[in-house]
Length: 176
Image (tube, rainbow, N blue to C red; front, side, top):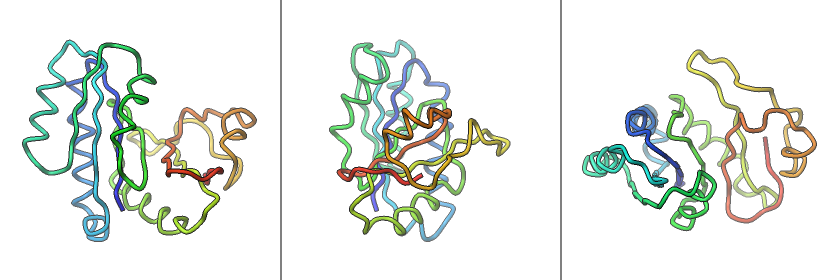
């Protein structure tokens, strides 16, 4: 399974190391993940004026994971995501902000969810709750195990921004 991680960033060179290290650590912690998961990290720089480009090129030179760096004139986060998603070639795509990190077992959890759902033709994506560094849930729990994207965003309206959605390529509903 290939996981494309999209990270929009703006002047966060000092924070990108935490995210990078969490990605690398996830690939090293678990044998099943190491053997089954490939990562493509797509960093889209939204016109930073700090040393973001230099920091990312240091990570690229380490050759631990596949990294693509793209830079654009400042247009905002959503524009950055829309401009870089075309380069994603993973089985799953996740957007992870430059000030976030993946928990130690995140890729294992993603892999297990992928194995459990990959044969279903009615899934659009997988959603996972976000937690702080102390393990506290940020936001609310999901009301249902499965829902539609419309219901998740418009009917439930329960801090959906505090979850991560991992998108597959085509189907119509989301498993939460």
